[in-house]
Length: 480
Image (cartoon, rainbow, N blue to C red; front, side):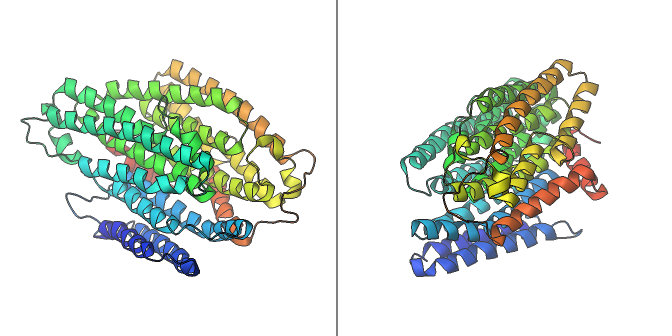
C-alpha cells in the first residue's frame, strides 16, 4: 500500500496546487512541493525495512530494480525541491516575476509518473507512466516562456511521442507473441510463460521497445530532444530530467529484457545493448568536442552515460551498471545544480563567457570542478569505480572489441570535457553580471550532499549497498 501512497500523495498535492493561482500564494505552492518531497522520501526509505506492506499485487510491486530507481528519484527530487526554493526566489528577484503557477503542479505530477514507472510490473501501466512523464515535464521545459524553450518543449514532445508510439507497438507485439500461452501483460507472468512465446515476435517487440523507450532514455540515434530540453529547462528540472527520468525509461527497457532472458533471447538483447550503447557514446564524443554552451555539454554527457549504462548490460557487468546508474544520477544532478548557480551569477550559458570560477564563485567553482571530474570518470569519485568495473567484467566476458571502443570514447570525452571545464574554473577573474553575488546556503546545501555522496562512494562501497545491487542484478542473471 505504500507504493500506492507514493503515487497518490504527489497527485493530490499537485491537483490542490492547480487551484492555488494567486501570486500571493506562491509560498504555499512551494511548501506543498517540499512537503510532497519529504513524504515521498520517507515512504521510499520505509520500504527498505523488512515486512513493510509496500505492494498492491498485481499492479504495484516494489522489486529490487524498481526500488533502486525509486530511491534515486526520491533523493534527487528532495534535493531539487530544496534547491528550487532558493533558485526560483533568485529568478523571481531578478526578473520581477513570480514562479509560474504551473511549475509546482507539473513537478508533482512528474514525480507521480516516475513513481508509477518504478513500481509497476504491468507493461501497459509502465507505458502509461512513461508517457505521463512526457506530458508532465514538457511545460517545465517551457518554464521561461521564450522562443528557445518553446522549440525545445515541442521537440521533446514530438520526438518522445514517436518513441513512445514505437514502444506501444512493441507491447502489442509482445502480447501477440504470447497468444495462446495464457500469459498476462505483467513481467512475472510473461517470464513464467516465456518458453511459450513466439521468438520472432518477441525479438521485434524488444527492438521496438529498445528504440522507443531508448528515445526517452536519450540513446542515439533518437536523442535529439535531450540537448535542447536540458539546456532550456531550469536547473532543478534539468537535474531531474537527467538524473531521474532517463533511469525510468531504462527501467522500462529492462522489464522487457527480463522477458527476453527467460525466453532464451538474452544474447540477442545483449548484442543490441552493445550496439546502441557504443553508438550513443560515439555520438556524445563527437558533439561534446565542439560545444559552446556548458548546459548542452552536460546534456551530451548524459547521452554518453546512458550509453555506458546500456553497454554494461550488454557485456554482462550488470551490478556495476546499476552502480553506475546511481553514480551518474548524483554526479549529473550536482553539475546541473551548480550550473544553475553559474548561470545566475554570469547570466550566460556560453562557455567562453565563464572564466575564473574558482576566483569569482569559489565554492561553486570547487563543486562544479568536482562534479566535472566525477562525470569524466576521474578518481577518487564513484563514477571511476563503476566505469572501471564495467571495463573489467566486459573484458573478462570476452567483449574485447566493445571494451576497446569503450576506452576510446571515454578518452575522447575526457579530453574534450576536461578542456572545457578547466577553462571555466581557471583563468582570469571575470566580473559577474550581478556584482558581488554569492549563492545562498539553500543553493549550496544540496550540491554539498551530492558531492559528498559521490566522493564517499568512490572511496568506500558499503556492504549493504553491494548486497542490494547483487540482489537487483540477480533478476537479470547478474551477480557480483
